[in-house]
Amino acid sequence: MTSINVRVIILGNVPSNVSSAMIRLKIGPMRRNRKSIKIQDVAEVAGVSVSTVSRVLNNKDDVALETLEKVQGVIKKLGYASSLAARGMRSHHTNVIGLVMSEVDSSYSFEILRGVNRVIAESDYHLLIYTSGSASKFRSENQESQYVMLLNGGITDGVIVVTPSTGSFNPHSPLVIIDPYQEELETHTIYSTNYEGARDAIEYLVGLGHRRIAHITGAMALISAAQRLKGYKEGLAAAGIELDETLIQEGDFTVETAQKCTLRLLSLPEPPTAIFAANDMSATGVYQAAQQMGVRIPQDVSVIGFDNLRDSLYLDPPLTTIEQYIYDMGVLATRLMVNMLRGENPEKKQHVFQTRLVIRESCRPLN
Image (cartoon, rainbow, N blue to C red; front, side, top):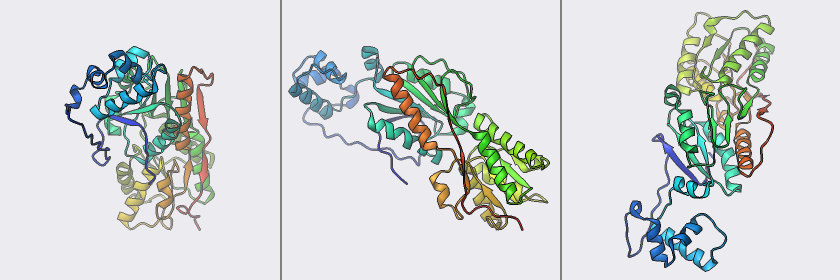
């Protein structure tokens, strides 16, 4: 897996399987507790005024190069870190972009981060991530609005929110939402053609001769999951296939839940010949359940996902899926944010990525 190298601070509860960089500081004779280091300490050691240190911290261009390098050296030596909120109050900007997401350890989140990282690396902005570490906790507590208010309170210059479960935001700074709770929001939103992608998936399976097609939904609080369910139902209707509610299992976009849903589907008196999973992680859960039950893919059941995560290429067999360009969503969201922070005000609010069917080896025609 490709690693991410960004200027990042992560707040919130990070899962234990996500490692954090450990930074070792070697401090000279004036060894201090890092938490007790103040701007006055930096000024004293550097032999300059507090205002000079402040101008260095705020990237002012009227500081002599020799003084700049000296102050920066002392800051590094002492391990001084100025308060982002205090810096924001002084200069009205922090050069930090906030990213609010429910979790950071999923393949979906990783693709978003890759896209965000590309733009952050090319800009003069830093990235601060706020996560609860759990998609279910994030949504059950419905904390996105509070997170956005917190980050907008002088800590960041703008915030990107990924898959929120609410459309109620009152931002004081630029806001961009990826995969919104609802499509018609006043702020800038980025999403894919979820309905059309689901219709394409069902049309493909019907074209292969399948009529008992099951669907494992995503988290139904999200517009993307609702649109994919709608596409599934209307795809069946367009093919003249009567809807069978027993073939619909409510999932939440996770591997574990999809595995349980699949066990139920494959235990039906007349199991499905094909399963449309609402995302690739759910499709992975289908694979695990099928292996557990000795069901072969695609010989016994065909499987199609949604996302085209890079991991889907390495499933056995490689997963047929719907591409929705997650990496590019992260890129576009961050570019929009940077442009707005630089004074631009794009008139276009909704930014839509057209999905496409990616055919691999997890589906087969019925004889």
